[in-house]
Image (cartoon, rainbow over all chains, first blue to last red; front, side, top):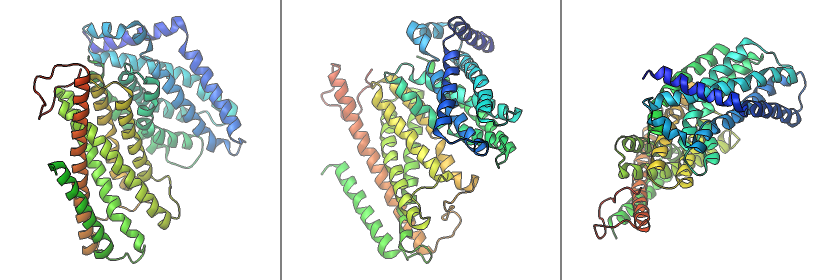
Length: 220
Length: 234
């Protein structure tokens, strides 16, 4: 069985079920807007301070939206016990994992479609291609790690507690590099190209590592 | 005294000798004064922590390959002892920083990555606590332990990769006077012995806990009291 087609089929199934229920994307969109609202009240924001505060709010909102999104990745499979059925098909566990990661990152990207314009709208920070590229590059690596650890904790009792504890420390490289890239995209000092290079490096490293590990996590 | 008790007593004795060397043999630093003596144990415990996390990594890889309960127990022992030594490293470093930098904490690449290291392996221990012991948990923990190890080279090379406040490597760059170097190498050796003894003792505790669980699960014990490792609990 072609692993690429299997992965696409799994991603399509997840996105189709999201399209039919329309649960996650509205919830995530509402969540990030609420996060921006809290940021607005937590900081004293004016046109001068906005570029130095907005990147932080962006990453906080994105990271916690990601935790919600990836925490739900295996929820349906768990409730219906369908993961075992999927693993019994000839599709390789890595392909199933890749499909789940693709679907979850698509949901997170949809949430960014709301977050990034809303950030510019509310805080008056520049909305640029550089900003979008930095956030998308970070999303790739964050999605592969998030999905791997969502699979790791899927069958553990205290999964809601464990997922943030495990994933957040491993996301830090993406927040370090992505934070720097977004800051320089918003006009603060710092090398944008260097940060993007780092993001690409981290993406490659973690996509390879998570695909290698997926076999041990999903295989039962 | 059994063998483990002897080993523990020996490790403690070695640490006391190392303390004597640090305070009475090593010369006082001209610039930093007596606070520089923190360096010996601070760096040694960082290296011991790296060693413990390497045990977690190796245990995790071996466990994923052949589900050896011994490998998993070594990984558990290594994580716990590694967290202890990382904490020692951070606390001693903060005491030094208070005197030399004027603040307990700065958001420096090495400090931050070491804090992340502590959080990752504290998370590893939480995984073991929050999920029922067994094959599944051991596999999950192995994956966490393998991924967590990525941070060890980051901590090590952070002083080269980023501009940091933290002093760079003084051992490999040959910057220490011979008496300080000798004190450091001796302290490092003693700390590594201490860490190894702690891992072995913790291994023993983990084995007894596995046996207790095995007995509680009602599995028939074919050997009266296994001198060697029991089978994995399912």
